[in-house]
Amino acid sequence: MSDIKCARARTIRRSSKEIVGYLGEHFTEPLSLSAVAAEFGLSPQYFSTFFRDNFGRTFTQHINSLRIEQAARLLRETDLPVMEVGFRVGFDNFSYFIKRFRLVYGVSPSHYRKNSLT
Image 1: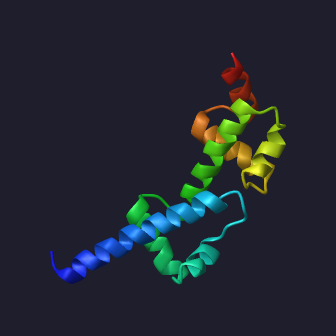
Image 2: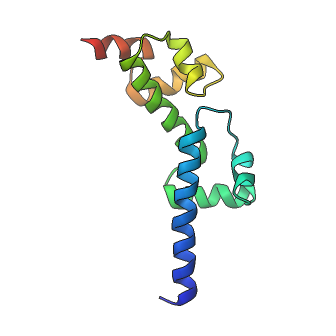
């Protein structure tokens, strides 16, 4: 592999780690692809392609996954109302939170909580 390709591979790995770290710290906040792209000095189009090529899913899929995983943890470990859980993990639309959660776990957040307690 040429020196240029090796340097590019290192840059991509470093950028990927930085992006994952940033998203892990900020996923509960309102995030847009264009704002995160700007944070890393990239165009939205390039960032979108870079993200899909390097993570195997879209930016939105990744953010939703982080949010749903955190919601499941909060449902298991706290007594927070389901609506509060949805808002706390970054969803600004309760119906959308329920829909996304059901797609991942096959049940509503309320049923998930009940099942995790038994």
